[in-house]
Amino acid sequence: MSKPILVERAKILASLFLIAGVVFSAIGIFGLTSSDILKLGDWNYWLAMLGVPLLLIGIIWLWIHLARVREFHKALMEKSKASFLKTMDDTEYLAWRLPVKYEKELEAKKAEFKIKN
Image (tube, rainbow, N blue to C red; front, side, top):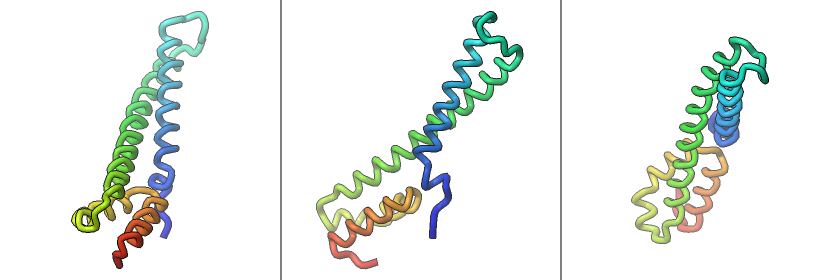
């Protein structure tokens, strides 16, 4: 079963939110501070108000995704089968919350340790 697009493409979507937030905030703030160059009128306020939440959402979403990936890879670096088995439930939950390719990595690690599902 495929995962939602918000999970499969989390890194790309979070980056797009981040970039859009930076661009909208920059245009809005720049337009508010220099009246002659950008003649957007009251749209500068709206761009700045839209840009800040997009920026925050992008930062938080990307940070959470990268933290999950980092934690998942840290769990897969385990050399001991006993230690891996202790944390396997948490690792499986992390793989479930990440894109499908991480579930495949987990299956490969289980095959390496000869662990059956």
